[in-house]
Image (cartoon, rainbow, N blue to C red):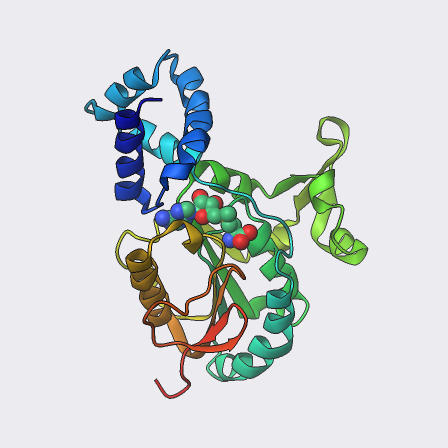
Length: 272
Ligand SMILES: C[S@@+](CC[C@H](N)C(=O)[O-])C[C@H]1O[C@@H](n2cnc3c(N)ncnc32)[C@H](O)[C@@H]1O
């Protein structure tokens, strides 16, 4: 891939998703574009750039962002957050929610293929009444969302889950589905999945959240973008609500109104 092609792809990806591809990502981008060249039957990156510049390129742009973004995730990743949710956030915040007959609301803001929101769901199912909680789950990538909505995972993916979680919340596939496990509808029904670019203005939710998970996505954004995003997320929390970020994503260099309470856990003031 030539320098000018990399620069073009890089600025397009930034403009669309704010994913900030450093110059060190050239090899990675090149490898990931390979898949799009095959899918579009084009033989060079130069032709692919022409396709992206042509009218009606919207669909291919979505595929490009899908191909570039890193979707790596797994069940109960950074497990301390799920312990904190069960042991601290729910006991502190759920009584006020119950008093007004509302729902304990959690947003998984870059949910990838669903392992994160289903881990949240398994946690909440263990400590809240069935009708009293709801999860919004969003990602920029249509491809991963399709997988998240289906809730079907390979044996290798679920094998490290505690046996009782597997029994309680998954159906084992038979015949052509041998080796697959599907999240039961009783859990899936608590989650609303939708495509959302976190940097596309205000998210379309009317009610605030007790907890927001926005993990392992901010590492791709520059400082100004992180500041904009964290402040936007903070406004979506109830007073006293919590924001969980990835453990590699310190918010210490950006201005925001949240208080750091533990590594990778931030809280909106109870008074605000
Ligand atoms: C590495 S995964 C993290 C998944 C999960 N939160 C976790 O921690 O395991 C990052 C996800 O962020 C999504 N993403 C990247 N840029 C985004 C944006 N601007 N808006 C929403 N999601 C985005 C990617 O599609 C990807 O699924």
